[in-house]
Amino acid sequence: MAFEMDKLLDFMVDKKASDLIITVGSPPTVRMHGTLKPISNKPLTPEETHELVKAIVPERNKEEFETLGSTDFSLRYSTKATFRGAAFRQQGHMALVMRLIPNELIPFEVMNLPKALLEQAMRPRGLFLVTGPTGSGKSSTIATLINHVNENSQKHILTVEDPIEYYHTSANCVVNQRAIGEDAPSFGEALKRALRQDPDLILVGEMRDLETIQTALRAAETGHLVLSTLHTRSAAETISRIVDAFPAAQQEMVRTQLASSLNVVVCQTLVKKVDGGRTLASEIMVVNHGMRQMIRDNRIHQIPSALETSAGEGNRLLDNHLCDLYLRGEIKWADAMDRAIDVGSIKARLTEVRNSLPYWLTQIDQKRISPEEAMKSCPDPKGLRAALQDRAKKAQEQK
Image 1 (cartoon, one colour):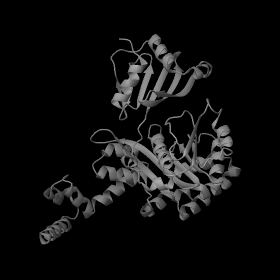
Image 2 (cartoon, helix red, strand yellow; image 1 turned 120 degrees about the vertical axis):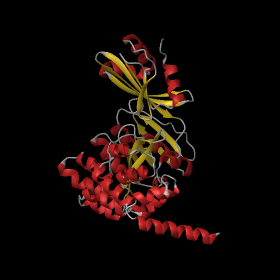
Image 3 (cartoon, helix red, strand yellow; image 1 turned 90 degrees about the horizontal axis):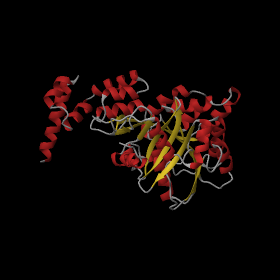
Image 4 (cartoon, one colour; image 1 turned 180 degrees about the vertical axis):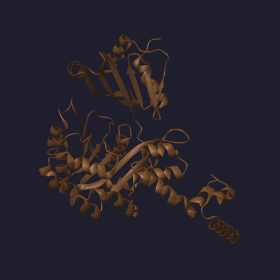
């Protein structure tokens, strides 16, 4: 059986696989809902792998591949999807990873994110960061935010990406998208030029080096809304990562810049759902006055507590959201623990919730447990019985 790249890409689109891995000695393998699955029993030979990689890498990337041993690229696959490709050498052979970028944007409510973030994306200036590990859906979140701005305002949107993942067609906004390596030599160079290109919103694909971070902060300070990503797990870690990228002598100034320009940090991760697929768990920090003062005074360790006390403003800790998803029966305990930042904290929250009557009433209402079983497990069976009797009495009166 000969493998053809078109058929492999079609398979990904049909099965909604997130990634395809091509390497010598293994069959073509896809990642579906976070799990790797071979799509054949036949391992790839060096010759087959060479042909598959050669067939997909664009001409403009082949010199970089030969010179550096790796290259990244973007591929628009007819009208079906866009793919982000990474070709590289390993043990003297070629290898390839293709990531599926669906053409259809995911509705914001399906993402498990509050709609208030769409309002934050409409602000005229500041820094909006979406962070998380590789494969956590950062690009999808950013694309949906940009699409919302594109459809609901009249602005100039300029993106700087490596490579371009989601392609946006100008709607009410004018959209320009620049690919590193094709349209600009580096993020730093593209961003310096961007400030002279009359943008209202700038997407920086990733704040990956000091020059890019410096320019992004300057853009956010000087009247632009800047969206970007980082590979961090929490809001506090995100702030520390940015500050620590600078020499010690500049860090106080950077904290002041961040305190004035940072609007939002969304830290997200994808977790397996009990009924199949994956759901998004996130930490959200919509920066308020108190948080700005914490950043300025280098009291970053107080950020988690501030997120808990400002939950009414739309903020939340990742661990709390994981706990809520588990209590709603959407994810397994082991998967929640695997993604948790502070395991002790999430266990304490779970204990607190399980000791509350609303938790047991909800479990009964959603038919996850019978009233009799709840009575045996609830720490306050008398209180639960009284609450159930009171509800039954009110229901009877309403009839």
